[in-house]
Image 1 (cartoon, helix red, strand yellow):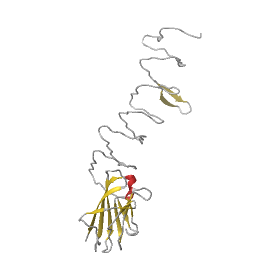
Image 2 (image 1 turned 30 degrees about the vertical axis):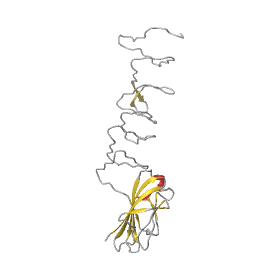
Image 3 (image 1 turned 45 degrees about the horizontal axis):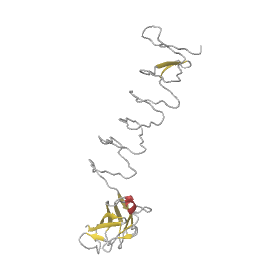
Image 4 (image 1 turned 180 degrees about the horizontal axis):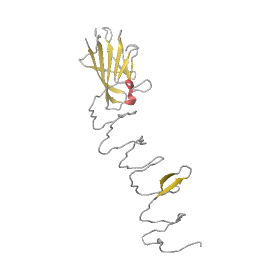
Amino acid sequence: MSSLRVTNLRGGTVGTSPTLPDGVVVTGVATATTFDGNATTATTATTATTATNAQGLTGTPDITIRNITGVAATFTGVLTYEDVTNIDSIGIVTARTGVKVLAGGVNVVGGGITATGIGTFYSGLNTEDILAEEVNVVTSSKLSDAPNISVEDGMVHLFTTAESTTSTPNIRYNGSTALNARMSIGQSIVVTLITTANASAYSAQMTIDGGAQTERWIGGSAPSDGGSSGVDIHTFTIIKTADSTYIVIANHSKTS
């Protein structure tokens, strides 16, 4: 018989469903109130062990459904989904185009947060513990011998070798990137240079990306000598007002 036309198929007794042991091939649309992937039990003859396998829906190339509701799910490949309500992952979660948190914030219990790019905070930054700033400690040379200051290495630079002469520090981002390329108009940074004091050692000028600046010294005038002991501290507040254009507020302090 090549075809069978019926209105209903029912089980042998009332309330049961017919069994199709060889499966069903549907070339049109199959409509059902529910789809139930029942568990089957298989016994391995060599080990006499029994395994239960849940059988569900399979299809080639894809099965499209509206919602999946369950206690848990296992995906062997990459799960791509937009507008996820909750994610509980014991492994790494990778977001290709960013993470947007609309409410509730981000709570990191352990391990901290490591950002390799620039972190931007629009409504402030609240730290409940210590806020540590990186310091570039230079022990191999003096500021007068190594005047290029790369803020990529930190905003505070400490030179432990005693100075011997005047110097003109050059503030940049790093050896291949200009500070101008990393700062936006309307942004400011503060760079602090700490040198081991010498009366004949001080910085009365500075440059940014090799370009001379008109410093505005606190107290009204540039320094003319260094301290006789301790350390000298030069602080430069740099405000970018236009492309390659800055206001530099400079300060020189001596310690005992």
